[in-house]
Amino acid sequence: MTVAHEIHQDPPARLNRWTQILSSYIEVTKPKIMVMLIFTSLCSAIVAQRDVPPISVIFAMLLSASLSAGGSAAINMWYDRDIDAVMKRTAKRPIPTGRINSRSVFLFGILLGILSIMVAFIFVNPLTALLNAVGYFYYAVVYTMWLKRQTPQNIVIGGGAGAFPILIGWASVTGSLNATAWLMFMVVFLWTPPHTWALALYKNEEYTKAGIPMMPVVKGARSTKIQSLFYMFVLFICSIILYVSGSFNYFYLTGAIVFNCALLYCTWKMLKEANDQFTWAKRTFICSLFYILGMFSSMVIGII
Image 1 (tube, one colour):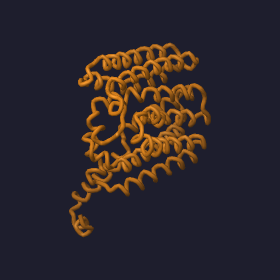
Image 2 (cartoon, rainbow, N blue to C red):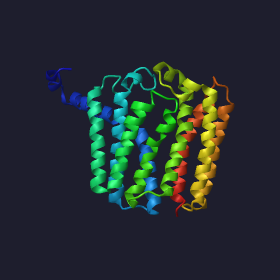
Image 3 (tube, rainbow, N blue to C red):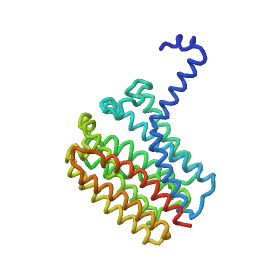
Image 4 (cartoon, one colour):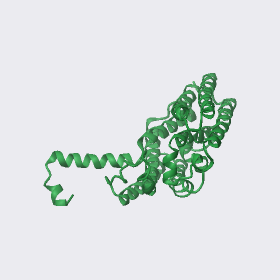
C-alpha cells in the first residue's frame, strides 16, 4: 500500500488499518502468557507483603513486569520468525503473515525492555529493575537464541524465564529475596517441563518439521512422559516444603495437595496412554494451566 493510497483512504479504512497494526503489536507481546506471568507476580507481591501492597507499588511493578515480558516475547517472535512460518500453530502470527515487519518488532521489543527497567528503577526499587533486566535477557537471549534450537533440555533450563515474575513481585515490596520467594520460583520452574512437554507431545510433528529439538522429537514420547512424571514428583515435594517452611497455613496445604494430585494423576494417565494417542497429553496441558491458577490462589488465601 502506497503512502498516497493510504492518505486518500476514507476515515473508516484508515481506522481499520491502524487498528490492525495496534492489534499486531499487542499480539507479539504474547498477551495470554503475559496474563499468567503478571498473575504470579501479583500473588508473590501479596504473599511477600502478607497483605495487599500499596496500589502505586502494584501498578509500577505490574507495568514493569508486563513491559519486560512483552518485550522479551517480541524479541522471541522476531528471532523465531523462520520457524513460526513453518509451524501451523504459529504460522498466523504477525511477522509470518506480513502484518508487521520483523525490524519493527525487534525495535519494539528493545524499547519495551528499556522502559521496563526504567519504570522499575524509578518507581519501584533497583533490585526489581535488575530482576526485570535479567528476566528479559533470560527469555530473549538465553532461551530463545541459545537453548531453544540447541538442546532438548531447552524447556528445563529455560523454565526460569517464566518464574522471574515471582521474584520481581517479591522484590517490589521487600527490596530483597528470601527462601520463600525462591521456593515459589521453583514451583513454576519445576512445573514448566510437564506443562510444556504435554503440549510438545501432541504438537510433535510440527516441532519435528521446524527442526526444534523438543524432548519428544529427540528422546521420543515414552522418555518425555517418564521425565514429566519425575518433575511432577519433585514439584509435589517442593510444594510441600513451601508449606513446611512456615509461610502458609492449612488452606495452602490443602490446595497444594489437591492441585498436585490432580496434575500428577493426569501426568500418570498420559504415561499409560499409547504413544500415538494424545487425549491425556491435551488434558495434562489444560490441567497444568488450572494448576498455576489454583496453586497461587491458594498461596494468597493461605496467608490469611
